[in-house]
Structure formats: structure tokens, C-alpha cells
Length: 255
Image (cartoon, rainbow, N blue to C red; front, side):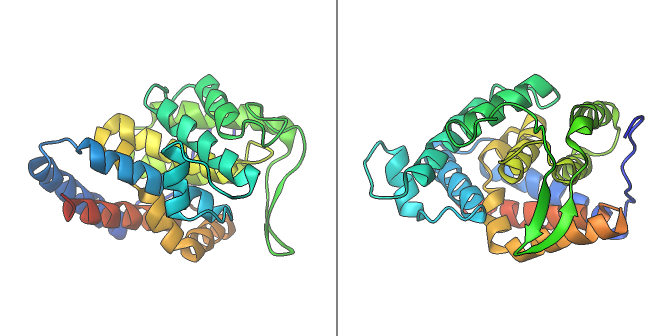
């Protein structure tokens, strides 16, 4: 990945979706005066945390997640409760993070995986694969290549003149391809995608994109798999733009 250039082509569908999303953003800016009220921000943040962890097989309900974040005690798996608290802390920190800074990525992972893995805040030192049941669907690059791969990916993002909507989705795909951590890669990839978008338009910090990914979870992994097989992330970019468009449509209908 030296002089990294992603395998990607801009399709008619991508151009159409970027246009439709831009229209939605304009509409929401008028409806919400460019801001999302504090109640809706909190509700959407809780939905984001619940959905992102549910994708990772956390069994706590939305109500239980809400109670945890309200400071109430609940009966549940201690690790799952810890995941919720960690994710909340990581998403709160997100507003202060620089999405183009690798040290900030490690800082966020350290919080996200605190007391869940011993390697939190560090890149993996061993091989890792992505499995569907017992079937290996993706073998990530060797651990010794991870730091350089991530460095090149961050450098590409900073220099790329592609539209933020497009290059943030490419980043999401490439991050998951690299799978830089021992654990927590999926939740970090989704959070960093949100961070990249949020630095462009603040309302993305409060848009529960993960909620719709959870509802279309099989498609999410399917499109990642297709992108891997084709060595072309376009199909995944199309999927994520559809998700973003749906999330904005949902937000436009809320008060």
C-alpha cells in the first residue's frame, strides 16, 4: 500500500446518491436551522451505541442501554455493560478527535476496548481473519504491515480530492480490509466513518447511521465481501451512501 491508491471507480449510482444526500442536507439545514436539539442528539447517540454493539452480538436492549447511560444499575453480562460504557466514552471523545491523526485513532480504541482486551490502544501483533461461522471470508494483511498500511490510508484520505461522502466510505472499507486491531475493528471503523463525516458536517455526529446498518447487517457484510472479491470498493461505497441517505430521510421526519 505504498503510494496507496484505492481500487475504486465512480459509478452513476454514486453520483446520483451524492446529489440526493446533498439535497437532503440542504432540506435538514432549513428544517433544523443547521442544529439538532439536545434531546434528539441524546436519543440518536444512544441508538448509535446500541446498534453498533448489537451488530457485535451485544444482547442488551435499547432500554437497557438507556438505563446504563442514565446511571442506573441493570442485570446483565458485565462485559456487555462495559462495552456500552466504553462506547459512550469513545463517542463523547469523538467530538475532540482529529480524524486524520493516527494517535487519536489509538486513543479512541484504547477507550472503546478498555478492560475488554489487553491490547486496547495498540495495533495487533498477530494475524487475524474475518469468519462467517467457521468459514474464513477475509484474511487481513500480516500484522507487521499494519502500521504502514494505516499510515498510507490516513495520508491518502488527507490528500484525496474526492467528495467527503465518497472518500469516507472508501476509508471505512479499507480500514476493515486492514483490520488493524486484535478486536474492535468493526465498531472502530463505523465510528471513524462517522467522525470523518462529522468533521465535514456537524449533524453527522448525531446521525445514527449504525441503526440502519444493523437493520441491513447481512447486506453490510455481503457488500464488504463483494468489494473484497472484486478488489473494488465501489459496491460498498454505494451501499453506505444508501444508508446515509436513509438516515437523513429519517432525521428530516423527526422533530
